Length: 286
Figure (cartoon, rainbow, N blue to C red):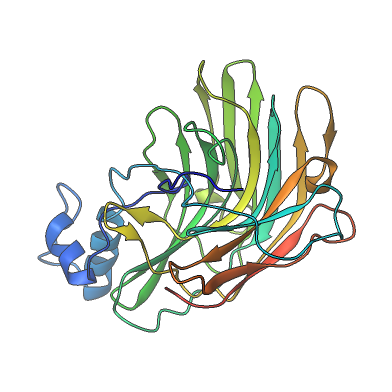
């Protein structure tokens, strides 16, 4: 199975440029004063400013890989240039949830890299996106952590929390009722990062549900994937107009992130015995 190339759903960020270029392009947030700010505060302000006005795209591409996965009924193995995780396909999706402990990033260079972790409805086979989760930004050698949401048709990432830390306990959900979508992220460790927002969409497809580790992309292509070690999702639930269950209750695709040469960047493991969780292992940045 082949699909036409798309930009990633989730977070399509600004052009893939060196960190200094991003600093010069975006500068501090409007109205911010850097004259008396500490170097750390100045860098944090610049890193945050670089996340403003982000556009949303779609997952890169996917196709079946060789071999047969018999461990989950209906499972298809696919590849993507910027997603790793699981997606349920079908129609009428109304609820998706999941929980994780925020991974620790290793920022080994001054090159800007990114990693997003999220749950959502749509984007896998549609242009509409309704998603929320956490984001790691490696900027000038330092890791910054955020909570965020995004909603079609605006398709701009909305950063909410800026005090997220590795090890924080995160739960995320998207719940639809008719044309109303409630997007919620709870950071039970640092509650200031938590949020709940209700948005409206009358043209969203509701054709997939996802649990994803993502390498965000921009106009110049996919960003390097921040080294997050391992992302482990648990407690996933999902429902559509006909049933409620876990990831394995529906027709699901296992998605491996690869670069343009086919080398694995992030590898998902098998679903757990309950069909409601899995881990994704970071392999390389690009």
